[in-house]
Image (cartoon, rainbow, N blue to C red; front, top):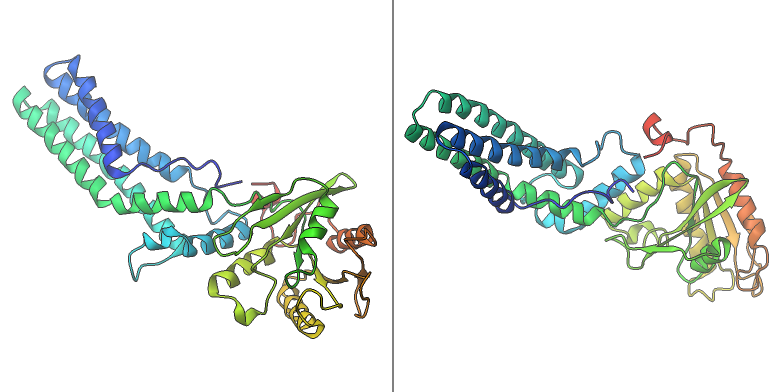
Amino acid sequence: MIFESLPTTPRAEELLDKAFSRAARSGRSKSGFEAQESMLVTASNIVSDNLENIVTAWPDFDTVDPFYRELADAVLRQSTFSRETPEGDTDGIDALRGSLSEVTWASRQIREIRSEYQTKLRNSNPETGRKHRKQAFARIADILDEISDDLLRIGAARDALRDLPDVRPDEPAIVVAGYPNVGKSSFVNRVTRASNEIASYPFTTKGVQMGHFERDRIRYQIIDTPGLLDRPEAERNDIEQQAISALEHLADAVVFLVDPSGDCGYPLDAQLELRDAVEGRFATRGTPVLTVCNKTDRSRDVDADAYMSVTEGEGVEEVLDLAVGAVDYDPDIPRRGSTPESASGL
C-alpha cells in the first residue's frame, strides 16, 4: 500500500537537537576554522537532508490512482490532521501539499545558509568564525520553528493514512452493497473462504471487509464497505459522499444484495430505492450493478439478476460467476479510468 511505508515525521525540536548534538561531536576532533565549518556542515546537512527525505517519502498525488487520491483526501478531512490545520486554511490533500511545500522551502533555505556561512567562515578569524557559526545555527533554528506546525501536520497525515486497507487499484474489484443485515459479510466470507482483512476507515462505523478469490488465474478483490453503500444518500455526510466517489474509481462491478423477506429490518421498496440510487451513481462510469436476491430459502419475491441463499450455499458460485462476467477483465488492457502509472501497479 502506497502510504504504509511512510516514515515517522520528526518534530522540529527533535530534528534540531539531533543536528546540533552531532555537530558538537564533529567539532570536538578539530580546531579553529575546521571545527566551526565541520559543525556548520554537519548540522545543516542533517536538517536539510531529513527535511528533503520527509517530502520525497510521499507519493506525487497527481500520479496516484484516483481511488487512493480521493480516499486519502476524505480520510485527511475526517482525521486529527484536520484539527492540526489552521482554521480557514485549505483542508485534505491540498493542506498536506502546502505543508510539504513549506518543508521543501525550508530544506533549500538551510542549504543556502550553509553556503553563505561557509564563505564567511573562510574569510574570518577563529573568534569571528565562531560567531558566524552561531548565527547560522540561530537562523536554522528559526526556520525549523517556522515550519514546526507543518511537520506536525505531515506527521498527523502519515498516522491517518498508513493503516488504510491494502486495496490494489490495478486488480479488478467487486464492491458489495445493500442495506445492513442482507448478508453482505456472509457472502464475502463464503466466496473467499479465507481470513479476510478487516480494516477501519475513519468515516465508517464498522470495519471494511475485503477478501480475494481467483478465476482463470486472475485475482479479484471483493469489498464490503459498511457505513457507505448501506443507506440513502441523504443520510450520508460530505466525507462519506467523497469516500463513495473514491469507490466509483475502484469498482469494476457492484453486487447489490436485497432481502425480499424483509427479515433484514428494511422493506423491499426501500431496498430497491437504494439500489436505484447506487445504479445511478455508478452509471456515470459505466460500472454494472447486479441485483442479487439473497435468502431465497425465505423469499424469492423480487425481480433480480440472480438468486442465492448464502446460509444454504445455494446459487453462491453462480452469483460470483455473474459478477466476474460483469467485470469482463482483460489483464492486457488497462482498467477503466486508469493512468499509465496506475495500470502498471503502485
